Image (tube, rainbow, N blue to C red; front, side, top):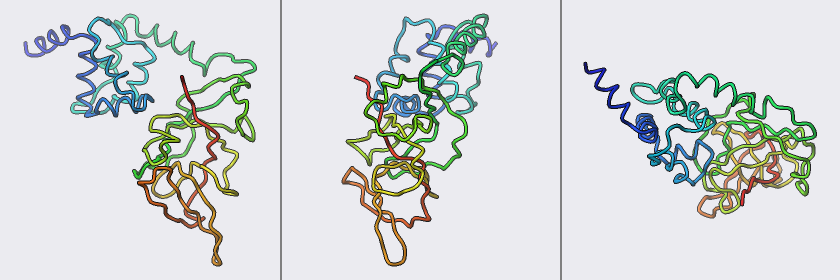
Length: 251
């Protein structure tokens, strides 16, 4: 009887109510969920999905992203089926997933376009720590026309990657949630500039300056946000991932 009542109450909930209940169960805030979805500070854009009382189902691409974020979190852990209940009736889910996969740029022909992978390895622009991970599998694939890179100083179009900015130490130039374009061919620090680099503390987006010294060169780590102090590290303590070639800006 108890299980029936719980099921009956859930049937009365709107899709927005169900989404909010799942998010709250994971312990994630509105702002953190929006950040993980790549919305940056635009958390109100995500909140609209929770407050919309008329939408019967969420778009499949959004649910695919929420699956990666929600499943396994919370007590009890959020399940795959609970997340996909937000998308479509059970009888239509498999068909929708298959159709979405067919429309995914990873599987579609894009003759003449430049392929740029996006990785789930954030570049911290703040003081927080993000564990280093090997960049092996792209979370997304972007296809852009060659003209999209006109005026962008890159060595080779097949050595590019996209990453998300985390933290505010490089504001106003680079803000949390923004996507930055990384030139991976610059994997050594040969001149000053803005780089993504890894250390024992994580992966960071910073301005780097070479400081010659009698006992070997040091690297000065500089933040654009003046509230963050400069500091120095030995060359051997950092690993250059790539140079920042630009950032994605939608207007």
